[in-house]
Image (tube, rainbow, N blue to C red; front, side, top):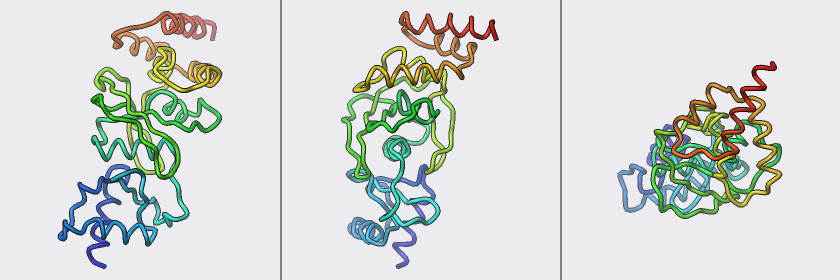
Length: 218
């Protein structure tokens, strides 16, 4: 149908290929949900959470395709807040940087305001929305399977984990992530992160000293 195609193209053109139902432009606004249901039934769209849907990349069948937890979490946050106001952070950013070897059942996304309850994705996994001052974060735009989005840099991610900006994670998972991130962190970039922070704890300060010594030895 013409309307179905027009609606699907909106998802394909959207940042991270995701939109809220309320943001879909449809000539028959009262029945937009019916259009979405048809597209879901056809495997052209997949529901991520209440009111948010995503178009699989590359024309894949949504009945057989499932996004990674990190990509899905970032897509939901992007649909709600905009692509420039959200970022993967904490252990989810560590996963993006391949600093955590195994999958984690929870994703963390930085958002510009507080008050957003955690959600459980239809595709599996839980997402926490953490209020952060985006201007103070060291961010980089990275490719995901759904498109380009913001992620905290390895240095910012390392700092966040050392500052204990994580929850429901085993200590050994965080230790593995910090070791792997420290191995690739640039001392000057890490120092920049510390200078931008409002508060720096002792583990984060000690990491700067360790990075400096390691760079000197290298």
